[in-house]
Amino acid sequence: MKKVVLALVLLFTFVLSIIAQPNVYVPAKENMEAREQFQDNKFGIFLHWGLYCMLATGEWTMNDNNLNYKEYAKLAGGFYPSKFDADKWVSQIKASGAKYICITSRHHEGFSMFNTQYSDYNIVKATPFKRDILKELADACARQGIKLHLYYSHLDWYRNDYPWGRTGRGTGRSNPKGDWKSYYQFMNNQLTELLTNYGPIGCIWFDGWWDHDIDPNFDWQLPGQYALIHRLQPACLIENNHHQTPYPGEDIQEFERDLPGENTAGLSGQKISKLPLETCETMNGMWGYKIADMNYKPTKTLIQYLVKAAGRNANLLLNIGPQPNGELPDMAVQRLQEIGEWTKQYGETIYGTRGGLIPPQDWGVTTQKNNKLFVHILNLKSQSLYLPLGKNKVAHAFIFKNHKPVKYKKDKSGIQLQLDEVPTDIDYVIELTIV
Ligand code: GLC
Image (cartoon, rainbow, N blue to C red; front, side, top):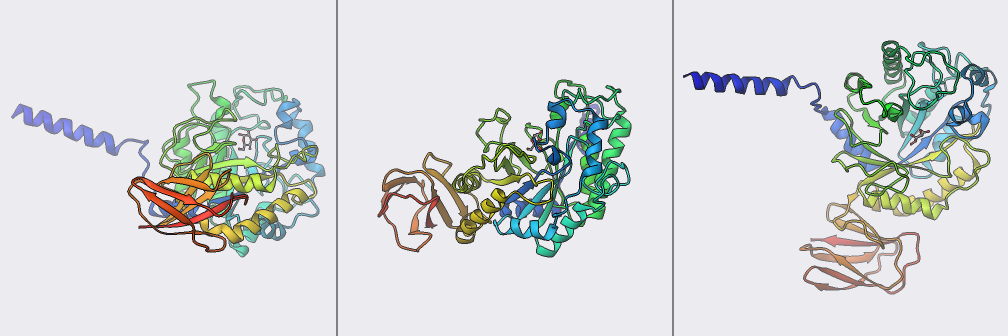
């Protein structure tokens, strides 16, 4: 009898510990659907826009040059992006085939690019422009049918209540300890505004966690913040650019300047989770506007990056730094148009697909939708290509762009494609019907 009671008590405590676990995150139905849609969308445009655009040396300039926060704040008084036209941005971005826009609502510099009642250091109250560019962008996105995601910096180089991390130490603030309670409340108040006043938000894109990675005891209190977001908008996905394997409550795993599985920038290498994946990369070398950086990647490189991401089951979030006058740089607009010409023709081979059954190879990648397998040949110096298909059988094989059949020979574990030419296209796509 005693044993039975003991067993029951143990079972009860076990069940209780599971129920009471604060870290168990069960995504809502809307959230799960949003994840699928996010993955179907494949391609987004990132916009880094803040006061830093006026200094035109990138968004880290305040930290890199130890600019005093009170002096820096005076930039706001001269910020008048006279050519800003949200509808124009959205149509230029949509022309590329991008399905979502992620904009910096507040970057590390601490300036809010939206009308917030929790700090006067914002675009409406502190600039002569006085317009809520975020509201205008949100409305234009809604009108033109494209999703809006919001970048939100966890760290802040301007506020005195932000406990200092390893960056922004030279900006002249006097209170290294900060006041965490006040800062946490401030962030949650702003997040509440962002998720209440700007319509449906596709994602909150956090960045800056790593500012405190030197202190293992620092607690960002993420579960509470994440719960707030999911409560306000259950379909809003949470991403955190912490360069770690995702924490409970997160819905997207991010890779900065690297494709999942690669680590050329030194920020990746973490385990790839089962969550939707996204890689962010910038068109030139900086995220924020940098006047001296005309080194835009060729359109071919950008398209191939999008395809390589898709083949790794990841989205691409491709960045542009808008100018101080409110326009997107000409070179970026040109890239958007050229990418758009490609997505118009080849969109079907990436949108709505997932990484294909053949993992990424030196010659390219595969994407897949139901029984359609798209073989993206990006780099092949020969006319023949072996595809390890395992037990899968092929019913048809044809060139995607002109529907011409492709010859192939079968063997036990795959097929040998015999092409009529050595592929030279940006992406030479072969469509296979798998049975
Ligand atoms: C980094 C940088 C930041 C940029 C971001 C984009 O974490 O701190 O400036 O916004 O990457 O991925």
